[in-house]
View 1 (cartoon, rainbow, N blue to C red):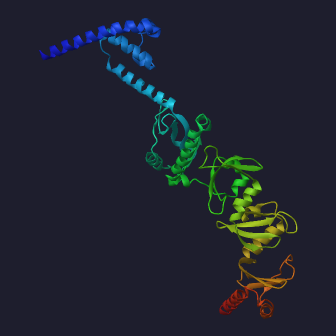
View 2 (cartoon, one colour):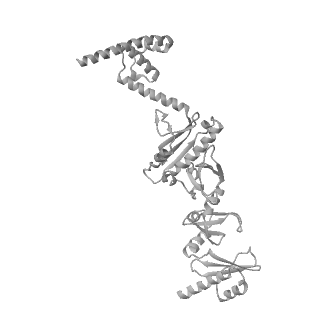
View 3 (tube, helix red, strand yellow):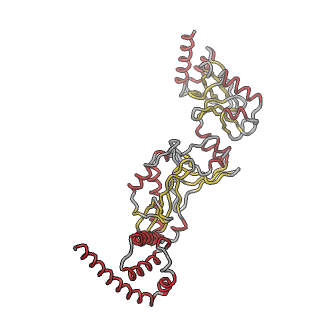
Length: 421
């Protein structure tokens, strides 16, 4: 009995609803020719799931209410779906895209975060996902962004490539005040994002000998470059030719990244050779050095000991056609095998009037050698220190500021040799 009352009540409500929408649709048709055409030409045959826009779905809703007094669940779901999609589109139209952050592994993208700005409310937004190519914008939240990026882990190695793109053309349409605000926000967000995950820092490269020899292979890679004494700068190689390299600042790129140009030799001299510790002056105007535990050979590119010093790894020098057979034999036999050279470390300089003298330690034997000259430009001829040499040092260099240090080293060396004997 109660069920019949409920059904009767529902029928009454639907009847009233049908009548209301029937009358209302006459009014809408009179004002909206598109609605009128749809009701006459499409409504009878169209299926709601085949309709791809909200306006026509609302036409079906109006006509169904006028015909049946209700709409079914499928149509309700479609209206809800397309209504939310329209809301997202309207929201997207109010937001200026200012850039994106991306994470890659071996060149394959893992995630993308879009950044946007709403000029009316002066509010920043971010979107980590899209729906049918529409960004799902949320108010910017640095802690949420940090949690999202820090959770990204590499699958194969312990390094991830962090990248970002600033949309300069889109931002240029904003007012100057907004542009300044956006640039400050963007640079700060890039720096913050880069620091959230240690795997991002692990992908930053240090300059190697391979860079000047095969630079195009490294285009798009980011390097630590010691541009100043106190700190390294992160710079991305954006262009490489046979003559020059172009680097752009990696973390600070808004409103425009700083660009730095180097020719190949300048890059090598500044970022490769500068990290070399000189070990010894060798024959044939060669130098022996070490960088990161690897032996380096330097050679003056001019004649008679003039020109710039060009450094290259020992292996590359030995394999190079620019080295003569005599130089290669000298390096392999005398320097590497016999260790027959004097080291620069702990060398002592003595001065007395116009005379200059030096003490250097022989790498192979550990014995100290001595040489002096009246002509600074003349090459010093080193000889092992004997009693006569000691007397000469006492007589002529006793007033030199490094005299005591020199004598201490000589005596220590004599004592060590006596113990060995």
